[in-house]
Image 1: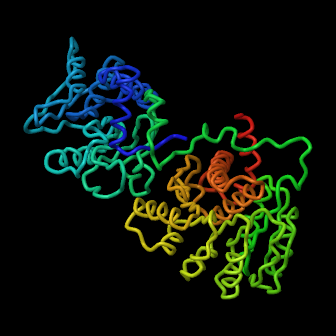
Image 2 (image 1 turned 90 degrees about the vertical axis):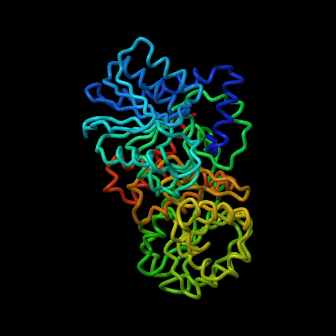
Image 3 (image 1 turned 45 degrees about the horizontal axis):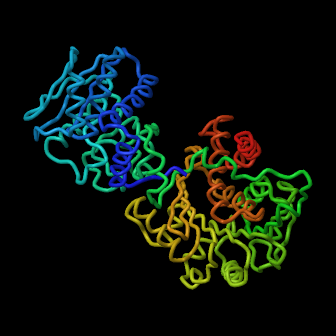
Amino acid sequence: MTGIFKTEKIRELDQYTIDHEPISGVELVERAATAFVHAFCRRHSRQRKVHVFAGQGNNGADALAIARLLHESGYRTEVYLFNPKQKLSPECEAHKSLLLAGREIRFSEIVNDFVPPAISVHDVVIDGLFGTGLSRPLSGGFAAVIDYINRSGAAVVSIDIPSGLSGENCRERVHVIKANHTYTFEFPKLSFLFAENETFTGKWTILPIGIHPDIKAKTETPYYFVTDEDMKGVIRPRRKFSHKGTFGHALLLAGGRGRMGAAVLAAGACMRSGVGRLTVHLPQRGEVILQTAVPEAMLSLDENADFISSLPETNGYEAIGIGPGLGTHDASAGLLESLLKTATQPLVLDADALNLLASDEKRMQLLPPHTILTPHPREFDRLAGESADSGERLHKAMEMAVQRRVYIVLKGAYTAVCTPEGKAFFNSTGNAGMATAGCGDVLTGLILGLLAQGYAPETATVAGVYLHGMAGDIAAVDGSEESLLAGDLVRTLGKTFKLQYDGH
């Protein structure tokens, strides 16, 4: 897995690479700058003027090296080095000398007053003022410079992290560069994964720069970013002599009057997951709907016509899911309590099952170990109380997962799977078209199906979230983000699984 490291750890990773590759700090900056320039040149024409803003530290060193390489590549480049303390880092000093050695380049070193240049909306600004080492909000002259850049209307590209942005959270965001694109080195910063920071990071891209693999492997972190590479080999190939009993029997408790679509979507996704058999327990009113939409599923009809009120026999199932379209009737609450008290199989709780859980602390106490909860942010806030921002919500989810010994799938643009061991796995697939009704029901069915096939809860949740997002990406390519429907995810799961096999 790709680790996500806190800023103080990043400096340790850099230093270890310098000491053990070995490579000098100046050369490591050159490597990062080269990667940045290769990516930059693919996106920005040489007809555009480039303004490079550099600070006194190693982010500024990156900026000076980038300015030199862009100048050599034929870009019209102007450089502004901010050095009010008249003390540059060794790497910044070295790359300043390299920039100025025998080159005619427009260069200004600002020690006192700064006269802002004229920046056109057709220009590009490269932001290299501050990196991950910034420990407090910007103020004074630097705050004014950042505000000036943000008002310029030019395209802004940040080096590693937008200046002024914390690497860990989404607070104190008063004077922060608003980048259109951020090229970050080796791994994303945790703050990039929070919705509130999208305004500042813009689109972000990871650029490998050869940080030593040994130090990445042995440096502990609770945060991981799940990529295509991580998922290779996770989905097991199916053996020739397999039969439906090989792939498990899932039970889905779902549906209510006016909400049968949720049960249909979850059931369809579960069947598409590769599960051997699925039984759906639902209200009598849903029989024709479910039998028509998902004829492959077996039905268990509740005694009630409009909502489910009684728990069917649960022996013989490998996994159980509950919640899509359930409703919050008292009888359904009683059913949930009975399930939590008696189930020995892995459980997935979603939607109204989570709302019923949140309405009574006693039900929270009944959660069996390794139960999987799949809340969106509002549902999670009902479980854990309001959060000030996405960063606080994430850490609450991580704490709850440890305390309750459960898995919490905190849904969002970078859905986080929080584990009982205190880890958080952020997903890299998916798109904004999936912000539509029913996509959560599809995820529930998919995870349920993987659990029933014998995948461990952590694997089922991480892989389920990844496959769910990839199905959304395929559906958006086949159609568009705007027109994407939850049912499209179910229909593209076949292509999604095929890609996993093709990648083996």
